[in-house]
Amino acid sequence: MRAFVYIIVFFSFFDLFTQLPIMTPLAISLGATPFLTGLVVGMYSFSNTIGNIASGFLTDRKGPYVILLLGLLLSGSSLFLYSLADNAWLLLFIRFVHGLTAGLIVPAAFTFLANSVAAEKKGKGGAISGAFVGLAAVIGPAFSGIVASKTSEVTVLSITAILMIALGLLSFFFLRSAVIRKKETDHKGEKISVRVFFQNLSIVKAFVGAFFLMFSQGVLAYMLPLKVADLGQDTQTSGMLLSTFGIVAILIFLLPTNRLFDKIKPLKTLIFGMAMMGLGLLLISLSSNISIIYIIMGIYGIGFAFLFPSLNSLLIEATENTFRGQAYGYFYAFFSIGVVVGSSVTGFLALTANEGFLLTGIILLVVSMIFLYHKKR
View 1 (spheres, helix red, strand yellow):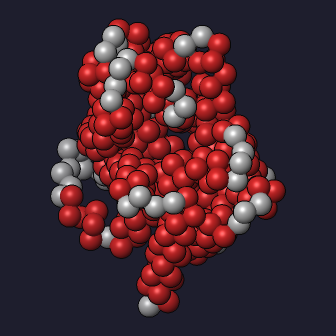
View 2 (cartoon, rainbow, N blue to C red):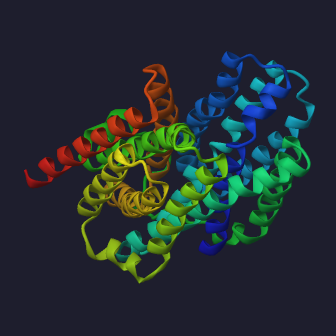
């Protein structure tokens, strides 16, 4: 049943990535001002954060199967609401509902996977799930752009809605018999204070890593098209560059290299991955050759591939089944916040593309050095 949950992971991120190319044009077509357009784009991440945290609590109390089923059906239903949007304010409300319901899915899915994988294979398991995330990042925007150009943005969202509801119905049949039962030593209904998560250094490192991973993704999504435009290239080149990093990451996730994540301590691969991502962003800021940037995006992809499974392994090592759902809820909340902060901060500071990449690269390198210092201590 793990294979089916990996499919759920793919489509939950596919839902996210298909939105990227179409939400701004959809908001503008409904008469949104630039400010309201920004709210429409960012509202999903805001409510998704709330959904992630709620999913964590509910997963620990009801089990991942129930929350997965609920999240898939509610998220799929909310996607159909986009066809009713006839003004920007209604679109903003639908974005809130969509983000909230979609936020239920990922923490429950990753809790299901974490509770069903052998401890000695947690790194490889994280790499495989990362491959499905990367695959969604490559396929989602391309699918969305092609379908929207030939039909409409609402058609893209309706197709995704059908897929999510179908997954929900299939979950009822495939996952109901494979519910991960809590161990007899677990305490049902045990309440864990939020402070507990932030007093565990491994969990804090996973949260910080998740935040800066997606902080860099937010900057990349915002600044890469500007960088490409400065070099006289079109938006298609931006898509190809993003696909390059995604493909490199997927190869590392799926090839025998994924065994490294179980042989090397996760903190070491975390430090290496974050440093490689920081280096990649620094090099992009210094480069003025598109061909070289393709190679640099490969370096960034290597960093992403090492960082993502490391965060997953750290979280699994530091948590128990009784409160792992809450941990994943907060973990993916930091993911959502990171994207918003990354694009917002660089936009607020009115940085050029090169300045944005330079600043973010330095931040990632500094954070990786802090982690290295704590490791040596």
